[in-house]
Length: 164
Image 1 (cartoon, rainbow, N blue to C red):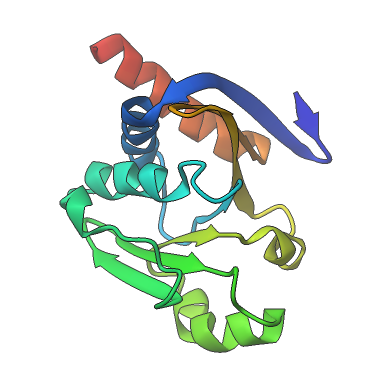
Image 2 (image 1 turned 90 degrees about the vertical axis):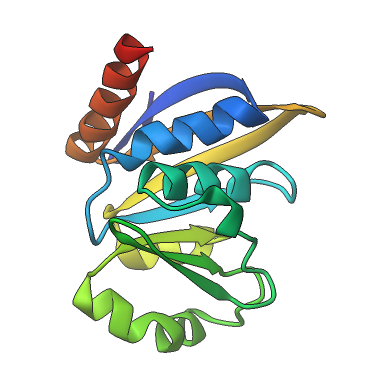
């Protein structure tokens, strides 16, 4: 499936545990400087997915909380994770005032909840993860990115499934 100049993979319908496991598997394919935009309704699994990424990078997933009121949480794992909630930010300028130093250094992985309006700024440099409610305990998950990035993530998912 294609969205603009991005390729997308549909990961199907997942429960909460599978969302966490998928984030954990994808973590192995992430590089410093990667920007992940998580899109979905409240309660659709964005923070749960982030817990999986943090776990995959060697941190205790219990430390992951929604950054709704703090705007940004930082998790120092094998790669530093900057977990941002852009929902309450008033403008793109405000976002970049908060993230300016981190973005310039490109040290770490950036996970931005509610970051859809920031995507245009980053052009095709983002990994977009879409969450859709199916029912109380299941979410439909798809990931879109440039072809080379999507292939890197896809390889991690394939390798992890072979190991299971």
